[in-house]
Length: 155
Image 1 (cartoon, rainbow, N blue to C red):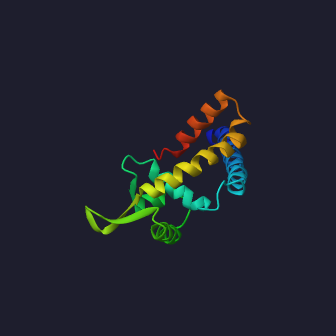
Image 2 (image 1 turned 60 degrees about the horizontal axis):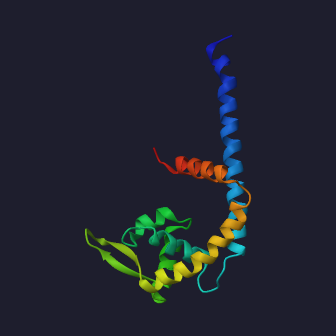
Image 3 (image 1 turned 90 degrees about the horizontal axis):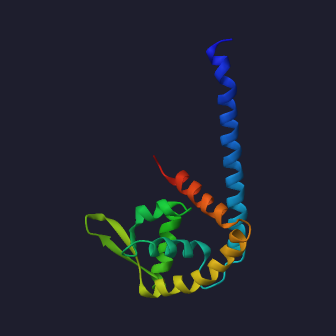
């Protein structure tokens, strides 16, 4: 038996396991996201608008360059730009020139936007807890968070 033949079995199993794990993760994410979107607690902002406010709220200065915001949300760049424009029109975020690059734009969460985010977040956390927190115990939740963090690491 050649070396290639001997290693083909484990390599094939590793690929099959990786694809199976990814499919399971993807389908779980779709199911959870559908529930969270269907049970989103307000009509004042959309689920995607909330995602932008959420990502901005996690930054130390509550702002991100537009190109960096695009990396955090599951929308195309043109869709994010239109969504940000809607949020600007409602006073929930502000667009500012990027100090180090005149061509760039910084998106900043306004106080009104932060207040909206916090109000919605409290209710949204209840839905997340009901959908995720009741299905997994504390150790499983910690393991899930660690595994997802590991998968997000680009290195």
